Length: 186
Length: 201
Image (cartoon, rainbow over all chains, first blue to last red; front, top):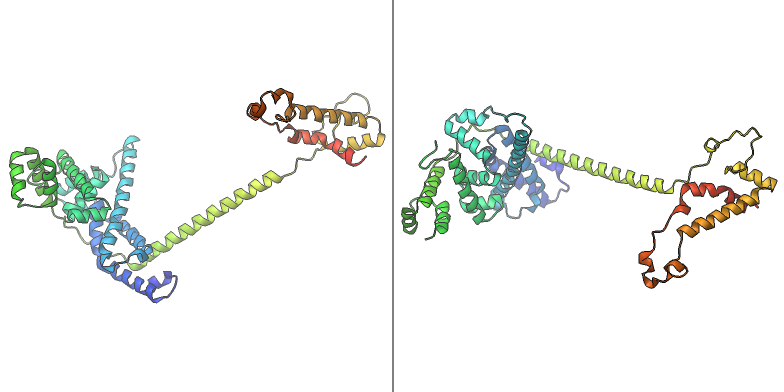
């Protein structure tokens, strides 16, 4: 707890407990957060940066966490919010690059794509990048992360109806992009 | 079951579908297609990826520190800008009118010894006062000029001005904007000799 103690404003027992809980939460959930971040942004370096930023967010907001049992969902929500902002910025830059005709964005496959190798993941990851941020996030959380509709709604901070709408549109769009076919991936 | 209910049901569940949903899917090609896509997507699973190195707690705390430094720097910069702007506003509003110097006076070579007539420098006014000849004339001219300018620029539209009296209470709506000509720096500079003479008779 040495590193945490440096930043503590006071040494009260409640503060120390909060710091301890945060460290335990960080250790317990970091792996899941890194996996989720990679599935959301499809890039290892960006995923690490996102998780670090989300953990820093969580550290600054840790006093707002009342129920320690809800820490995992709380961290996931912070990460998803960060990731959605990141994806939106990336889409804007991509659109700007296209509009200014700066040439195509990084066409080289990411480490994930090279590792996964399979054509289907390459196709699916590129198709997901083409989807609107909320649709891509809902699809990833529901089908790649395995959350149910309630979990997706909680992580994205939206209603169940909105989640269903995003999922429906994402499925239709992925089919149109030939990234998803009835009965299996291409 | 309607299509909307079927879509809601199949997006939230996995096969085997309920009998009601199955019955709807048999009769609706569109929902059947969506159900097939849903099953296909559900079978994707997560791609197996190599594990990333863990993020050290020090890394997170370092990010927190950097954010605090950035916030403080931004706050200090914003406060400094605000103070500088305030100081500039105060200084610019309270700065005195520029002193009239000799190099601003137009000197006309008439072939005669220079005389201060028509000159508005302080020295000329003092000389006028000492000579006691043309000083009063200039003083009267300047006083007349003040009255004339005031007449053009200052109007008591409601109480005294005949031009606007007919409008009654509406006079304040139709009057021209007040002129600040008398407070303008050139005019105040021009009045300096008069003020000096009045204060030093």
